Length: 116
Image 1 (cartoon, rainbow, N blue to C red):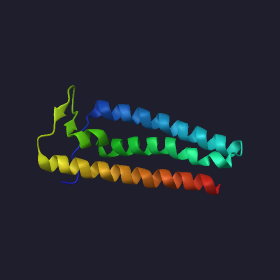
Image 2 (image 1 turned 90 degrees about the vertical axis):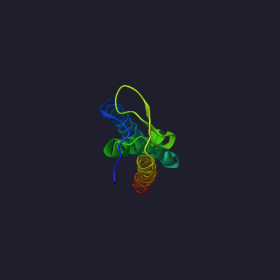
Image 3 (image 1 turned 180 degrees about the vertical axis):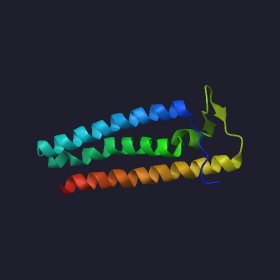
């Protein structure tokens, strides 16, 4: 079992919206720091970039990292406790992977902004 989603389409749409807002914030931060030559503030790009990458990876994997930690599923209108240990382990491993991938991608984005 390589995937065990814990969020439904409504939650996916919410995260997609948050991801787009984060992407917009990342672009605005990059443009501001580059256009106004704010080289000492370029580290600020990391924060909207991590917001964007976490939410977009959650959408791709259909796994909420907080719900996985708490052992909750939201596959419809109400929250449910995850009953299967195997599914919970898969969700928690997936959430760890999401956080790791998000940290790597956000760090790469920040590094690229520093090099420009």
